[in-house]
Length: 434
Image 1: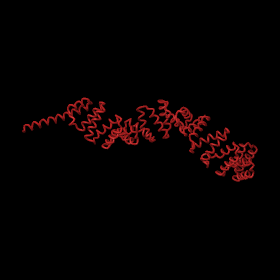
Image 2: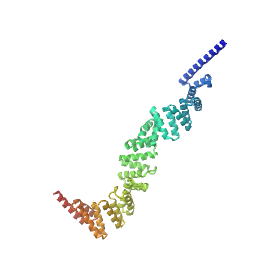
Image 3: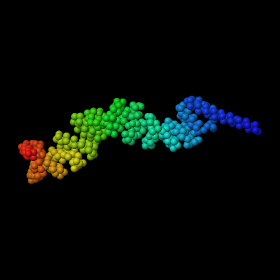
Image 4: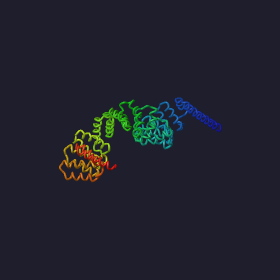
């Protein structure tokens, strides 16, 4: 009996030693990169029933190295079932599911892996799944962890840069996108770097990247638009006008873009193109009362007035008055309105406009002079006289009053009256200097 027990014990010890030796051989094969031999060895020497969760993970990694994706996933899942909290099993399964584009499963396994150990690797698999599932907010935190642990991960830099860009966190996006662009000259990345610089007020830094994007992909009209904006912001109006002209009709422009384009044309000496573009801006602005909309209407209104298109100019001036009745944005709007009404032979409306100008600024000598003249020409002599008296009483000894009256008389082609006012202004000036 004792001999039989001894024999059994000896056999068990031999098997144990062999098993230990077998595991060491298995590990050595893996460390040497002999993955196929390691798998064959396990099939022959390590029975399935005696394999630990760690052994299944190693088999999974070997199959993964050989590109045997489904076999690798099967091994990871066996290990996971043996130990549902095993980090390596969860990470490996997440990685395989991402490769197979089964992103919901990948997300689940990656999240479970992160619950066990918050690492850059697990964060990367989680981020990959989130990106594929269009969950950028969830991906952002994971990618930030990836870059914290692996700053050289170019894909993570690029993807997090895209997320920051989409979130309009332009300053954070730039260094990440630049790192990605240095590794691969992608025109889309160059464009985004350029736009980030435009949005953060660094137009000069934007130009090289936007030009590179356009060189690589001439039909990238978004880059052309950003380049035009950059040139406009830098005051390079000729270059801005040229780029706006190149992309016009090939990309949808905002009302402000049309306004900036018009300004660029105007500064570049292309007056006709400028006015046409201001009109397009007005059309795009619609009923907007923002500053650019008001200024575009002012430009068009003045041009129509100069060209004696009085009805058209009234459309613009009345809109401006409705948007800014106190004349803060356009101080001389009521004068312009009066001129347009006079052009349409509507003296009563012209008078109302000048009365409004005086109501807003009771010391406006030119308004008094013009109003008095309108009263006089419309046989409203009492009002004309009273207006002249008021005007003189405001600053009877101010030579500037008579200068303004003289200038207005010149505009009205009342030359003898103009001479009288200028003479009076000169006399008062000499008296003041004596």
